[in-house]
Length: 170
Image (tube, rainbow, N blue to C red; front, side):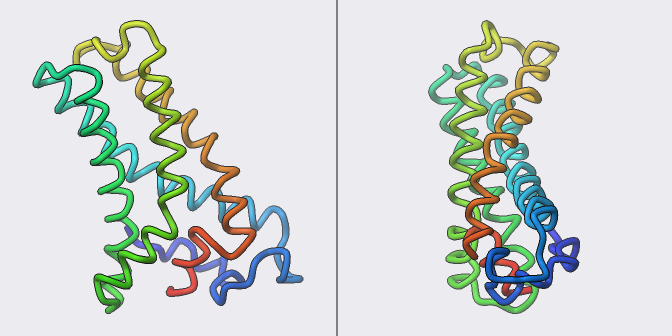
């Protein structure tokens, strides 16, 4: 994923938190937090959809399906952060460390929330891939997960952590 869309947030690029930077506003912090949240949501959604499709298509139980979806969500979430860092010439080890620092809390919150929602919606996990219940439940679960992860990302970025760490390298 190209992080060029974050260029208008250069005041965070040197590790300055919004509380330290007199030019930043709450609106700027919120915009950066939503951008980070949507970035994590993209990776989670790719992994969740792929995992749910694989588990459902293979007739796996809820535990196995959720397990593969979670693994894939973390994989794709981290990959979307690592890819542009590697493209910019960073070594894999350093890029991986940054991705872990930037994405772990957000992806964890999203995965807990979206999988709990999928489990509590009656029939969602057992619905077929051709079912509106399955896709509607998954879309709803991911949307709620993004809302749940936003304050986590906002809190981290305000303290120079989370995606603020990655932005320092762009």
